[in-house]
Image (spheres, rainbow, N blue to C red):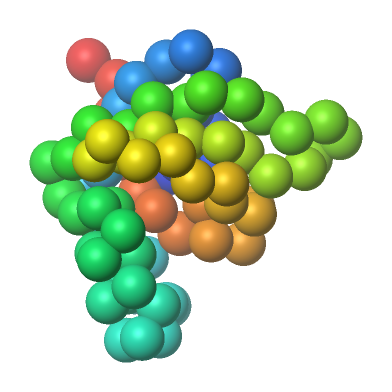
Length: 78
């Protein structure tokens, strides 16, 4: 399954859900930040040598490390 970590720079994807391995607190925080199913997420920048990814979601911009970005699942590209 693909995740936010896999979105190429400049591309948009739809969030399909969050990985079940995340704690309830992390899930709630991600939802508060706008990372909810059916929400569109745009990759603005990819970090150098596996560094963090910068994404826009719900009119906000966030920097996510691989550990979290990999747990935000996206719908397969059509």
